[in-house]
Length: 587
Image (tube, rainbow, N blue to C red):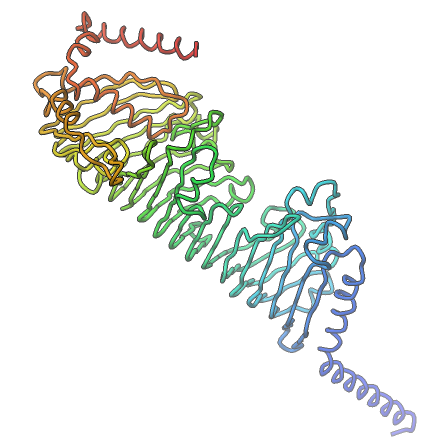
């Protein structure tokens, strides 16, 4: 071998050795190189920027070149200054500020070739036990401050044009949303723990500008211990929740919504009367939610809403005056006031309970009624005008045991496009012991039923916000009652003997079922503007029952004098409606 060739060989081997040594050094020190780049190019530049809102920190970066994986531990994203100092330190105040802690972020199966073209391809991205706090500023802090125009999407696209990952997961995470005012802060929302799994995730410029930010094949969300508070007045609790886009359904185990204060404290300091209402359920199922309408149009479209053991507890203190300026809605109008567009195709309520309490206006004694084993089915519940043009009627059928005893069936039809809140109501019951009414009548009305049975009750009414027409069929027997008054010495109710005797003499113990004038009454009722929907229903029954229980045959005969045909009765009803309409107009 010539001398020249030896020199070239030695030079080549030396160069190869240097490359191998450099590669080995780079391989064994790549963690330091990557960590140095991350700290200098990403973290240091952000933290040194005077306009940056957030301060970034990481504890350690571990890179496995052969496996193509990166593990970043101890990630912290925190506001540069204290939350309450933002209004004085920054010229730009965002609507929300985040505080994020991620103990570990894992990126597995990285494809290096794609990174050179500003593209990322990974097998999996895993966020391990992240903690997220979102601080929401109230309007007083945001006024006179310009908005932050920085675009997260634009900043990301500068370094990455598109990305694909087989799996993206958030594991054992926790989150809080905290409302911040000038004087204090309070928690609005919390969930701990929760997990999110997405498969076959893709991101590019078009997806970043969409409502979802990314495209994915499958999405699964699960969580526990959800708490939502509204202005320190009400609280919503959920036990477990699960969602999957495979059936686009949300399942909630244990659900409770109630005021934070007790019934008495809630009503004690109020200027105007307001109902205390609590709702709970063992399980709620929202089946076949339309995800496209939800993400793109913020429209909630649910094929089926199921409620298991739903319970409503309501309390009204009648000693507090009604607000003369408050609009009292009919039941069918309440859905229209929901701020979010919603359409529920089918509703099922299984094995629930409704309990209602109210007070005596004079002494504050409390009485109530309950509806046990309550079940209901509803259809076409909506506040979307375009949907209601096809069919504006919501239908609700319910069955219950009144006070745990007599079976009661009700039927509602609500015209959801009617400006006057038109609805139809039907109710039927039989073999109802009148003594079941005592828990309400005794403390609230000062009346005790000693005996009596309603053998048949039927109510039919067509009504709106202003007026109700219809009829009541009521057959009863063996009615005996006592009129009560408060004993000043014992502070307990006692029987008024003479008044009770007179009442039992005036009111027949049973109606004459062979006489229509003593078993059927007419509903012709003008609603007081401040009466609640359920009081309105109760007054319909009372208006029709007045003709029957009082045995006022003359009243009934006067109503029907010279009106023996259906045609004449129809004329009478039209005339009466016209007269009542004129009265309301004059009022």
